[in-house]
Length: 315
Image 1 (cartoon, rainbow, N blue to C red):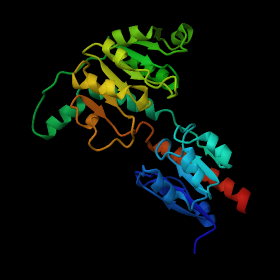
Image 2: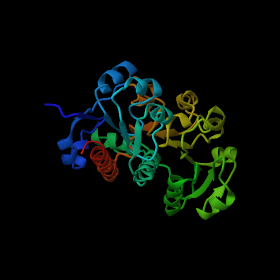
Image 3: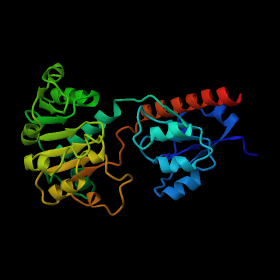
Image 4: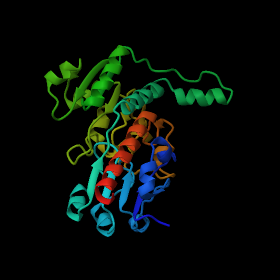
């Protein structure tokens, strides 16, 4: 027999949501249904989610735009992991009387993955691992980090952490963003430069901006054309910060040494997408925040928020 309240947990790709937190109290008061697949078409999303009063969404996976929200007549509460979720129309939630709550976030995962990608692409780790498994021995020459320049597009919390990592490896660090001041850069031990100078001089360019209409496409054909042929581009922030068409053209013609990417314009990335096929692209499927500690915070917070909401409305 179904309970009155129906709760959906969406996009649980790793099938860990119910094991990462204690849902006992919630399951005593409501039915909890977990979906581990991802839907893209609006009509199928609406059809699936129509019965539910509560949605638990992983940040920026399933879109909840105004059109979709307007059709979810039973929906009362959305709990989203992380402090912001660009896939949710906040104004539409307010308009339709849907309460939107956010969990806390763990900030260590994204810079750690970014640095891992930087080192892996610099030292050809994936290629050499594949060589090792196929019986080969030493086929590439790695790039040194010591003495090289890391260019940070954005010097927020993650950018500052990246600067510290780079300094440990004896790298020079330069940074640019639209609002960055020389004083703030100096506090992080970083030199403020113009956007053009950053792309022209950096050996590694790493993007660390929040996606907005102002920052969308902040790295385009003009910036990519300035980069050294031996330089690498790294993006673990958001795909649309880079003009994807310009990036693909740059990579196809090998105008830069390569790119390390964790984020894309469309996620999940289509199976036949060219970025999956270019041999000088090192890519991961948006796993910057996919860590044990982060998931624990996400789902424990989610459970706590739902318990509070259920007890306030139905107990």
